[in-house]
Length: 247
Ligand SMILES: NC(=O)c1ccc[n+]([C@@H]2O[C@H](COP(=O)([O-])OP(=O)(O)OC[C@H]3O[C@@H](n4cnc5c(N)ncnc54)[C@H](OP(=O)(O)O)[C@@H]3O)[C@@H](O)[C@H]2O)c1
Image (tube, rainbow, N blue to C red; front, side):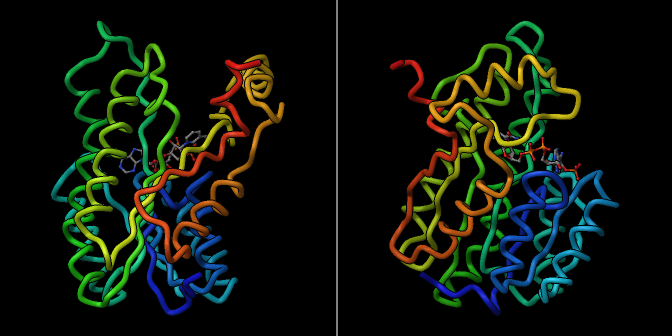
C-alpha cells in the first residue's frame, strides 16, 4: 500500500456529507487536502478546520464545476497553492431528478458538465503532473445508476455512466504512473428530508439489511488511493444491494 503522507489530494464536493468523510480520511492518512465546494462555503471551512486538527495542510476552493472556465481555474489554483496534485477524488454530483420528457437541455448539461466534463478537464490539468512525478491516483465516485439505470434519473445515470467510461479510459491511457478506479456507494446517507419509509425500504433492499455510512465510502476511497496494484477497478460499497434480485 502506498503511503500518502506528503501527497496532495483534491476532493471535489469534499466539504459536506460523503465528500467530507473522504476529505477527512485522506487528511487522516497524512495527505494535504484541497477541499472543493460550490455552495457549501461554511461546511468547507469546517472541513478544513477538521483536517487541520488531524495535522493536515488544508484549504478550501470554490468552483461551479458546470462551468469549464471555473473548473480549469480550480485546477490551476490548487496546483499553484500546493505545487501539484497527486490524488483526485471526484465526488461532486448534482442529483438531477427528471424523466425523459421532463429533462431540459439545461438539466442534461448540468449533469454531464459536473459529472463527466469537469472530470475530463481536471484530469487533463492534473494528470501530466502526476505522470511527471511518477505516480498518481484518481477515484471517481459513481452510483448504481451506471449499472442498473433508474427511471426518472436519466441525466444522472448517463452522467455517472460517462464518468465511469472516462475513468476506465483514463486507467488505460494514464498507466503505469496513474491508477484510476471507481467506487459505487449504495445507500450510505439519505438526502435531507428523505422520507423515513424510503429509508426503511432502501435498507431492506440490501443483503445486509441496513444503510452504510459515509465512512464506509471513505474507507474504500482510501483503499483505492493506496492500493498499488489496482487500476481500472470498481468497488461496490452497497451492502450487497445489487444482488437482492436473487433473494
Ligand atoms: N449519499 C448516498 O447514499 C450516495 C449513494 C450513491 C452514490 N453517492 C455518490 O456519492 C457522492 C457523495 O454523495 P452525497 O450524498 O454526499 O452527495 P450530495 O450531497 O448530493 O452532493 C455532493 C456535492 O456535489 C457538489 N455539487 C453539486 N453540483 C455542483 C456543481 N455544479 N459544481 C460543484 N459542485 C457541485 C455539492 O457541493 P456544494 O454543497 O458545495 O454546493 C455537494 O456537496 C456523490 O457523487 C453521489 O452521487 C451517494
